[in-house]
Length: 263
Image 1 (cartoon, rainbow, N blue to C red):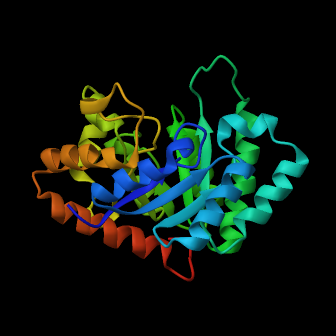
Image 2: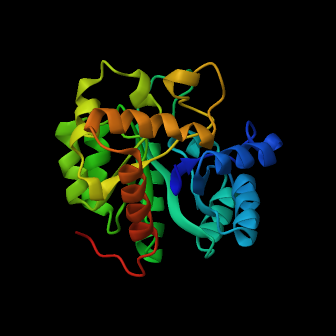
Image 3: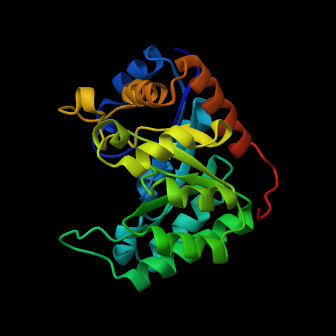
């Protein structure tokens, strides 16, 4: 397989970056030609931007993850906004809402405020958004409908088939990660895998998280995106290269547009 795009991978984070050269070499050997490096901290974003300046294999997205916004200082916000404006940063994300009951949670009102603030950056800059949505489908949908004026990606989509059309109507692309290989009882999301339009589908790893079922004892890496592709093709009854080619076209269509309008 050749021409694979991993639309969401945290390869500059603390888990994978110490063995960066091996991770990227293995990804290339697996057929990965482009990786969107997603950064949730300013130091991580600076590192990714420098890499992207020297290698067209990499795009960068950065913003504050919903469960990190409580610890972000005023200085952090100022620096993140400066970084988002750089040309190497192709998207704003991952941003969104997360209602999972972690040991330490961020209040919903604080998440919403940060979400809207960062959506406004994307609107102003004409850059797509990467949306994190966990157990928060209705609130995420409502905020996007009211505030979003650019398209983007529903990252690691698990919102189900019924909700998917609303996101498609907002100009969003639907990206699937390793969770679809092991959350087989989530039939609503499996139906979304089966029925999402081919011109709106993307694939990702979310590395080092969500390692696909066949290698779940390991940290996830971009090379394991082949398992996500295999599962989607099995569910949809299609050839792997057909999916890879569609994803490639979709990613470039989204990231290379010069102007965005609300759809």
